[in-house]
Length: 264
Image (cartoon, rainbow, N blue to C red; front, side, top):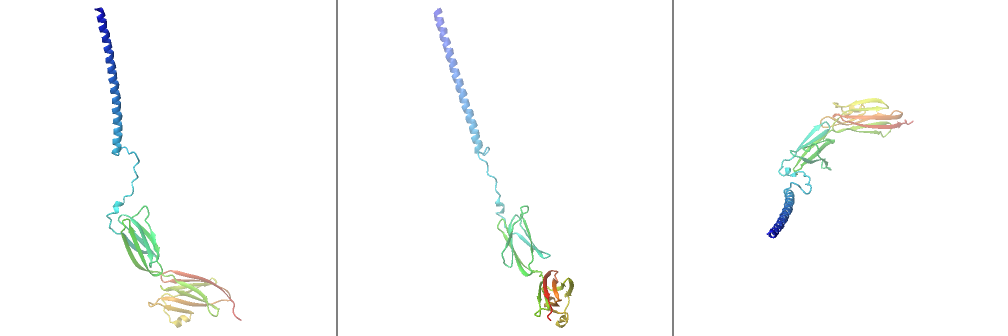
């Protein structure tokens, strides 16, 4: 009986050992399987975030300027031409953004002007008025391609032209001043001594002008537009400085020098 009981206890110990091994195997298997599930879950989460742009794999490109705002823009730029003294101030404006303006005199080569960075809705440019009657053409173009054109003629003030020549005999200087706007006076110095010929408002006959060595030409509205004045040389050095003034206030000048020796 004792022998049988001992055998029975031995078998029982063997069974307990086997159960422990099985439990340990399943425990390890569960740990491994759980680890695999965790790893797959993390990978799947990252993939899902990339798919929906939550964690981009490459940097997003920088945004570019939006040109769609010009798609429905059909409003043309506006142009103003203002006379300020002897200049014309060109002012071009647009509801959104100007691209450039171009201006030219008498269909000559055009000058192009772009807007400033701090104000792309306005371009201002000041230019000199050309002498005489001239036509200015201005074109303004906006970013949508709309363009506006303005053409206008201007009467620019004319600066007097002055010449100093010798007479055929070589004994006197002939001062000539010409200005289509009309001459108001001529100032000249001979060796520093100043002389003035008043002209504005005068209307003399040729005979009267001749008494003061002047030949004058009048325009149809009574302005003196050309003067020729003869002044005799002095013996030795003759240094002339001449200024002719227009009725509009512009000045033209000329200098001349001549050495004169009287013939014996």
